[in-house]
Length: 201
Image (cartoon, rainbow, N blue to C red; front, top):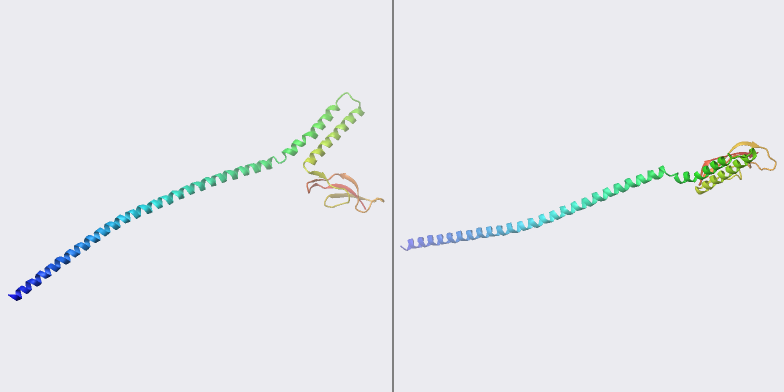
């Protein structure tokens, strides 16, 4: 009988241990589930925060792109305006000079009109001469305003003068300009037209 009691006790102890193990397993599973729930909750919060950061970054990128596109559009408009003004300046570069040439034309027309009066031939010539002198003076004034000047005639310079004739002249040194047949002109430092001259041998 004692042997059977020992067996029963062993079975009871074993069952008790199994129940305890089962209880421990259940507690572990409950803890795992609870922890997973907590992690899931934390994971959702993290995802929400990250999504918020992503949305904020996307919005900032959109704003930056919008600003960039507006700045580019403004730059393109500015560039077109500058191009338009540049071509306009080129097209009308001679406008001031053209206006200044109106004065010589007016002087010449006045000379012609004044010569049409009841004058004899000598008076007509005098009127025309006076008108032409006024016209020439007006031209020279316009030229001075626009940095157009006559070339110098001291000594022959092949860069400024075209020697169309050479003559012997006792009182002149070699390459002295003896006579100006057609005046030469410069615009600032650039030669507009070389002068036609006679040079001493």
